[in-house]
Image 1 (spheres, rainbow, N blue to C red):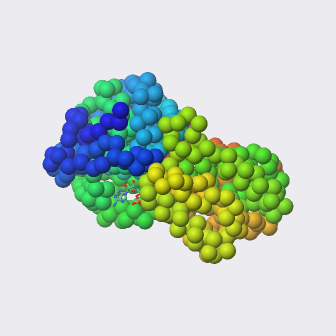
Image 2 (image 1 turned 90 degrees about the vertical axis):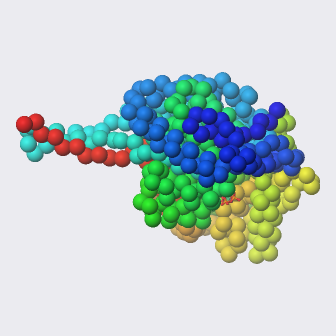
Length: 477
Ligand code: NAD
């Protein structure tokens, strides 16, 4: 039932030139379920040739025709949700319901960028001479190298591909080796829609070798990466040496500030749902839950009850609410971070251990009163562990929220309009959602500040990251 994954180069699905493959494991069973082709330099050279020749065609394709093809890809993807969702669950671990919603949301992302591409207007600037036109024209930046991770194998890739293609760019996508087949099935929805050969190329292999080869290559004009901050900094430095445009969607460590006047039920239920979604392997997951002293005990009690009620199991089972962690590295990281937090004086209220000895299952975990010196207060946990600390006064909450070099997402809960406005202004973050969980829709910007990266992955801002600005001045004589 689980397919092996090929490379897509110049419109052809193919094995690696040297026949190399990597294993794909099911994180719920730790069994090998398939293989993924491992690209060599020869394959990358082919992909570079095709992405360049396709760009010559695609950049001249009208925005309306690009939109027609993007809508056809969205239709294909939507029609295949039930077929692709189990593949995504088997390779990544998430429950089937989350896999389905990742795929349906992906088709919405395609549609949004399809329409926005039609509206990529330029500008006329009033001239200094009545016979002159001064025009600002938007052009596609060129072939893109995109690198996407394993936590949302489809969603991470679709944001980059849809925006790039809508803008008139062509793409070499280096997707996640650990969860390759759902992404390949998503890409097939595009090739079946009739995109020109080479407009989308899909490769897997050694991430470091591929990025080192593609980023400096003269064909590539833009780099887009989603992953950890250390890798993002390394790739940005390399791109800088070759003056390539970059979008970096990197790590987060989201503060969630719960004020004493917040609605106690909705703050608990929203934060618990989003903490354990995708087993916490989400860059915008709430991580440091900062609760104002008078509300602390009630919030903790409600949150622990919610954590204990999460049904953990194989994502293919209908009752499962949280699947296994996507790889064994995350189990090691959870054990290290929780052990360190407890050693430093934090209280472990529930969870804290791996479940069983087969599959990467981990208990939904709640820690409280963790000192800022603990590793988990400084390092992105990327797993199902919530830290709940108390604060007295908004200044203390804002200082803690801004203490880290991350600045991706933040959350706040309060009934006071004045407090909401203050937090929206003072928290150093790319996105803040107040009294709701309203991030990551296709039409809104998705971006970080500080070490969380730069360049948006949503909204019109995302399309602009794939466009060059050209100024044209023309006088009629
Ligand atoms: P990692 O940092 O090695 O890898 C993260 C991603 O970057 C993977 O998809 C990997 O293939 C890719 N990558 C790594 N080195 C690369 C290189 N030189 N060139 C191109 N791509 C490269 O480690 P990991 O164990 O997979 O994840 C660890 C941490 O990464 C997580 O704890 C989390 O903080 C972060 N992460 C963030 C996101 C996100 O959505 N922002 C997604 C996955 C991982």
